[in-house]
Length: 255
Image 1 (cartoon, rainbow, N blue to C red):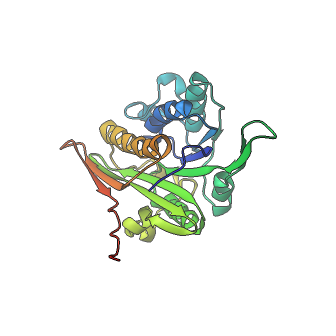
Image 2 (image 1 turned 120 degrees about the vertical axis):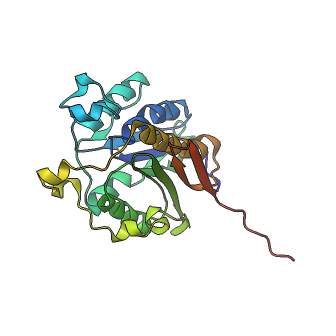
């Protein structure tokens, strides 16, 4: 699928923890190199704890600080980009729709420039299926959007790229590829009790970095190359194996 190399870009990332924290530095570098207007908004309501220092992209000086704030301020300043973050969990359709709403941007100097609408990319770097259900609902109602979701356990994981254009889903989102995501009875982070919040599935820094790399690779193909055929990727860090699912070209009917 082809994508414009001139359109301004807005990226909204939900989650700044294990995978999201490793996405951020590479994505800021990629966006810095693009010759067009870009926005990158990181959203997370969590704060850095000592247990996060083992596999997440934080250092002791970050303890007690909001994760989205730390990442946005650290890397946006390095690349001279505007610092944008939301230090809260996004848990309603209304809030998410406001964030992903594309703006019309003038390209070139007035009166010779022209108006382009932002290409919106939603990144799901969350650790619960309730948030994925929210993203799925918003994606299905969007006229145009790219939704890249990453998820992993201790050694394995997957990254799914959904593409919606003209009110149609050309690449299916995570909820279609893995329907059990939509059936899960997970809670939003703010709905968890202290005991529930303290329990988390085992993950590893290798799996988080592999998932983050796959996300950045997909975004690189879309924004820097203007072409993407990979709909999803599964991986295992134990076998050092990454397997993509590629969109097959449509056969042309004989005349």
